[in-house]
Structures are given as structure tokens and as C-alpha cells.
Length: 618
Image (cartoon, rainbow, N blue to C red; front, side):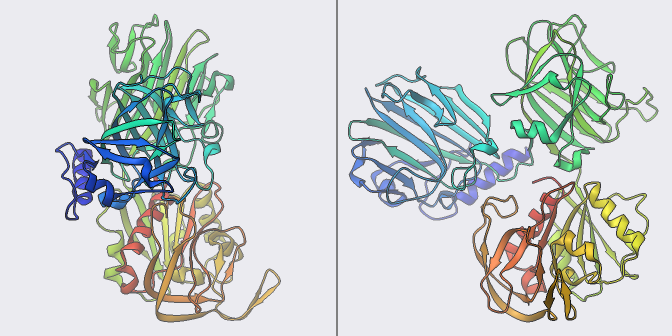
């Protein structure tokens, strides 16, 4: 229901300007319906005569050119979306549909990805491929002179292409694909006019914008993810990542998620994966478990994966608790969707949308280590004869990010400041006002926060508290530091390395360089430039102006990853950055002096994105 509501909301926002074609009830919005649409909402590059609109169809025929959508729908800037069109090729013709691109006057678009349109052109890369990355070679799923349906879906880094309902590309963007310009980001669409001999037709070009943040987070999309974010137990060779699919085949082993999302600790969540079994194979998906070097995991529950293995407990069961006996809801050799939801003590399992388990753990339940608690996920490699495939492994945490906002040592406007953290279902905050500078870190034995937000300028922190602070970060607790926290703990050397900066409260030498006392100026209008447009915190944002306080004369770490800069003469250039990733995530946002800054919608967006990123949700 939430997704339908959000999709409807996006469509309503997309249609808010006058003169935009109405969306259907299902959210699909036409992009090209008339000659007037083409003249006002599309912009051709070097050879404008290549594109004509005749009899309800876009005719593409002429010298090399690209037709970019520049109209009002979503302000011609799409991140997550569904796109569809009907296409007809002719003998020897070539074309393409670009996504996440941007207008340029000449040449092939340098931004975004191309979805190939080619039935019989000499290029062996045919219709339905993601050009140069996931190609359909030689045998096109289309036929010349026949209309076919072209469907593209982008959600996060997941790309899906279908021709006449048949999937030709289903993959996550790989890190090695990403260049400065060719990457999943956001942008517009473009239709390609390839060459004078090519004649291609398009009609019913439509888009359905999807919410930018559905909450689903990929856990395994690349070979690098497998190497860095997952940890196999006794027989590591059981797991391989090939062609965007996790292949499970070998001696008994379990692959545990150990990556940054939610610090690999999940309580309430939704989990989904596409799974394919083969004859006689067995596997499973564990949740609320923990890494162990050998044997079957002793903690958490197993969700069974078994279509035709001799074990009578089949796919979709909660193993040994609420089993699916004998009749599996899955078929060997066919992909099926596995869905798990845990909320409180309630467990739901669905296979291809059909509920197989709906069970609530009793209060007096005892079955060894099998209890609702919290923990990570694991994929089971059952035995050498079992061959099972997994793809599109994703999670949506349902428990809110627990945030502790540390204040003290500097006045601020309380009510408007704390409004920055309100109105988000996935963020739950509490203030920790420090009366003794840093007492929050005196005893961390019962620590229950995912992210620390520092908005303090207190100074004293004992050696014990320093070690506890660093221990929390080493455990994966995220850190978001704001504005005057740059001047906190001014004599603690590790702190400046942690946050990547120091505001000198008095003249001092730092790393062999003499610094004067830092300077500040109130009520400045600062032009803010997005320095890194691909980072999750700033992706899709535009440059903006904010009325705020400036700082100058700051020491900055040389290895900061800079996200925001300014050219204001009374400010240092760098005003937002992240630290090199280790066991946790650290971001510093220098903006945020008073209610004038808090009221800026860009600042509010930066705050919530920073918290989500630091908490492993972005």
C-alpha cells in the first residue's frame, strides 16, 4: 500500500505544472503524444531534421543525432523509474534509448547508459542489451517491421530490460562499469538517430517515476560486494559470483552478511531474493544469525530452500518450526521470489507472493538458539550435490535508526533544530545534553544507538571516555558531526582525525603548520556547490544558497572526501565531507548555525541523508 501511495504521490508531483499530460491511474505519464510535445518538450542535438512526428509516431531517420527529453515531467530528471515504448525497426537499422543522460550538442551522449535497439544492423549487439555492458549478442528478440514493447526499469543500482515481456537484462550496476559520467545517477532520456541509413519508429513513449527511496537496499550486486561484505565459513569455495548471480555449489558452508548496511545487525526487516533450484538441491536463508566458522548456524531461524531434495521440508518453510511438507511452491530450473518479513515476534514468508508461513513466536518459546532476537543473514551451501542460484538479494530494515543527538557547550535554537529530525518514520532520536562535557561515553555497556549526531562544543573528555568513543565507532556506530562540533574536544588529537577537521580555538601548531584562531561571521549568504554528485548524501541534489554562519582558518585532513564547497570569501572552501570508510561511516556538515539555516530545505535533506548514510541505510 505504501509503495502505491508513494508512486501516486510522485505522479502527482510530476504533474503539478500546467499543461502536462495527465497520468493514468496506474501512474504512467506520456512523454510524446503530439508534434507540439516534440517541439516544446524534446530537444535534438546536431541534426534536428533526423526526428519527425507523423501519425502519432516518432520517425527517426537521418544523420547522427539524439533527441533529449527536456519537458516538465519530473523536471526531466529521473532517478528510479519505469520506462516503456513501442518500437519498430527496419532492415539494417540501429537506434537506442539512453537513460540517466544529459543534453549535449554533438556526438554520442557521454552521460548515462544506452539500451540498444537493433534487429538486423551489422553491429552484433542487438535489441534489449545494455550497450557494451550486458549485451544481447547476434540473436535479436525483435523483428524488423513489427512493433515490439521496450520496457526499462531502474531502481537503485538495479537495471531491468524486457522486450515483449521477456527479460533481456537483469543486473546490478558493477563498480567497474562506473566512470565519472557513465553510471547510475539521475538524468533524462534520449532517443538515438544512429545514421542516415537507419529508419526506426517509436510510439507510446511513457514513464512512471518511482520513489527515490523505496527503502530497499541491495546486499549483493557485484563480485566486490561478495568479497568485502560477505564472509563464508568452512568451505569458502562453495560460493561464487558469476553474471550477477550468486552460485552456491560445493561442500557445506554458510555465507554470512558482514557489510555496512545496518552494521549487519537486523531486528525488524523485509528481505527478498530471487532463487533458482536444480534437481535434488537444498539450501536455506538464515536470519537473526551470527557468523560461526563451522557447522550449521546455531543462532537464528532458517527459511528453507528445497524443491526436489529428499528432505520432505520444502521451499518456503520455517525449518523445524512451521514446515512446508512434500509439496514445494517452487519449481527446479525456474526463478522464484523469496520474501521474508520479521516484525516483533511475527514472521511471514512468501514464495512468489503466496504466503507459506505466518507465525508468531510464543513468549515461552525455547528451541536452543532459535529465537527472535537480532542478527545478520546467511545463505546456506548444503552439500556438494546441491546447486542453487540467488540474485537480487535486498533488505528493507523496518526498525528505525536510533539516533542520539549530543549537545552542550554551545547555545542553539532548540525547537527549530530538533524539527530537523522529526517527521521521518525511519529515524528515532533522543537528545543527550552533556552537563559534564562527555558523560554519554562514560559507560557504553548498554549502548543502543546506531548513529551519533554531534552538535556540541564541549571540551573535556577523559581517556576512558575517549576509548569508549572510539570503541563505538569500531563497532560500526555511525557519526554525523555538525557545525560547531568542529570546535569540540579541541585538544584531543584523535578527534580531529575522526571528524577530519579542527576549528582552532586559539593559535596552535597542527601537523607542523601554525594556525591562528579560527574566524566566523554570522548572517552570510553562501553559495553551496555540490562537489561530489554521485555520493548517496548528495546524489541528485542541485547547487543552492543558504543563509548561515561561515568558518575560516580550519585545519582539514587531506584524505577527506569532499561533498560540498563554497566560494564565499569569509569561508574555507570545504564545508561538507566524509571520512575514509573503515568499520563505520563518518560525515561532517559544517553548515547549521541557527533557524535560518535549519529552515533551508536543502539543509534538512542533507541532515536526513547523512543520518541514513551513517546508519547504513543509504
